[in-house]
Length: 252
Image (cartoon, rainbow, N blue to C red; front, side):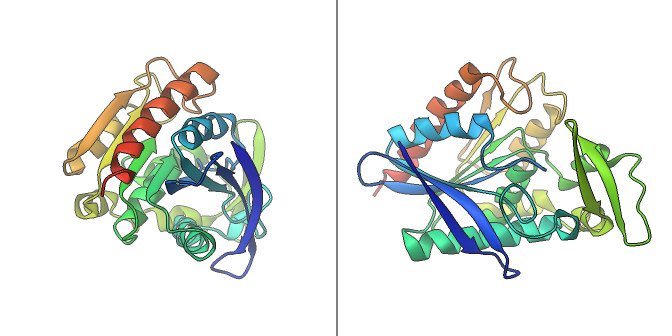
């Protein structure tokens, strides 16, 4: 696997930072990864998953959402809707520079995001989620006690890191009917979830599975934590995901 730094202009004119992981030979397909809430493109689990995908010949674009990591912009001015815009922008970048994405992968709230946009991306052949909530509103519990000031923003702490979030992010979460978007998506879906996930409970995976149409699959991540931080768990996930995605992108 080789990795190239890439950058492209987001929907609001700000530069988004990405990494493109490429197989040793010509890619058979391109995948797009949406990271978890307040995370970033360099989370260890994503790197381990990418190694399995590139071994299957699938290139992967992972990028930082607006205001996070090395991407420009203010996180406090973003919403779930701007995350969706970032996904469309990154898909357009892939299409213009290489090839349209055929695989969408999303972790946690990023999983909800890829489910929300998949139906509008004709190139996408299959979708996978990892520890995803069945409703974007689920992340509100992470914002409990947030004290929004006169500017409409508040300082919150997640995983020991501080972020400034806008009140509009909370309001926007309630405008999305994810179940309806899943029902109309009509793409093969693979749901990865740990039954001991303490951040997004396993009941969310059940709700996603019930909302989706066939073909759909569920894979338990055993004792993995929400971030799939143990290399063995991420490697298992990557092996299963790459084999499953390879089946769909390898079809005529």
